[in-house]
Amino acid sequence: MGKLAFFFKRLIRMDWKAMWKTTKILKQRSGKSRLWLLWDMLRCAVKYNAGYVDYKIAQMYRLTDEQKITQITRGLSNTIVRRMNDKAYWYLFDDKATFNELFKDEVGRDWMKVSADTDPETFRAFLQKNPDIIAKPLEGSSGVGIERYTADCWQGRETDFLRELVDKQTGIIEERVIQHPRMMEMCPTSVNTIRIATLLGDKKQGIVYAFLRIGNGNVMDNVDQGGMAARVDLDSGKLLTVGADKQGNTFAEHPITHTPILGFEVPFFEEAKAMCINAAQKVPQMRFVAWDVAITEKGPVFIEGNSFPSHAVPQFAAHYPDGIGIMREFREFIDI
Image 1 (cartoon, rainbow, N blue to C red):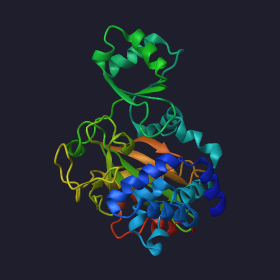
Image 2: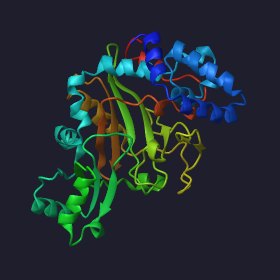
Image 3: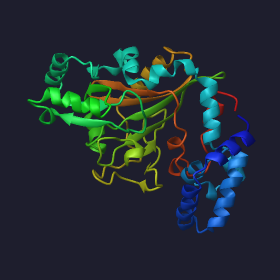
Image 4: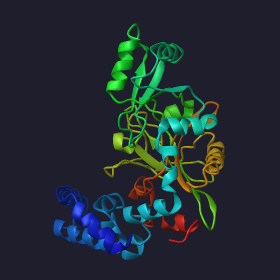
């Protein structure tokens, strides 16, 4: 989709109230007037296919045009995904049960689908074997609908519990992953996952970026659920940046555990990279996939794969203090 076509499509669907509210937030951060910020947002929308969320996350008000052009914005991200990923194969990643079956060796844990047709005895046997579970909708993103349950939630009332899960539109339950003790030191309330993006490009194939998602007291590590993220060095597995959340707050150490973030080394990172690179070859029609990887005491396991990777978190302003976005990384793999 061309820049002008994307701009007018976004213009029609624009949440102007939210956009104006964003200018208020950014005025406090930047000291610039709301009208100047609104004008610059619209200019960036036309010139760089940037939405107001792109503008906020990358703090584009502080960037020169030479820096702005290095940002992967929503419009460009959508183009890359549709160019690299055959939509006929998205379901292999979007449906969590299908993903778990396809990558069962890399998932490495018990799971089962649940529905109104689930056999109560099979369900009861699963719960007896797995007293700590994660329940998820079959499809969805941003951690929506994901909950943790332990045996005290269903003991003696398994049939009722099954009905409650179905009513909540839960589609799959899984044995809860127990993360590596070092990852537990960062945040024990959530499984802190590494998002590793593989790109089977025309110039090069491999990993284009990685970042660690860190919980902040909730069950989920997702930034949409209050978590934060820090960029991972692809060679060393160490965190290159401070943590940053969706609101633009930064953290030199975890606010709950006080574990230092900058320089933290992810265990089994080489193994995690190898697992993702190998898995990427299994569905070559999906050339750009973001893998969410948990680290256990025995090594890496998949939590899920994403058919439409978000461009936003990798470009939190705190991850690129020089103002140069991730365009340069992508250009090593494909022509943009």
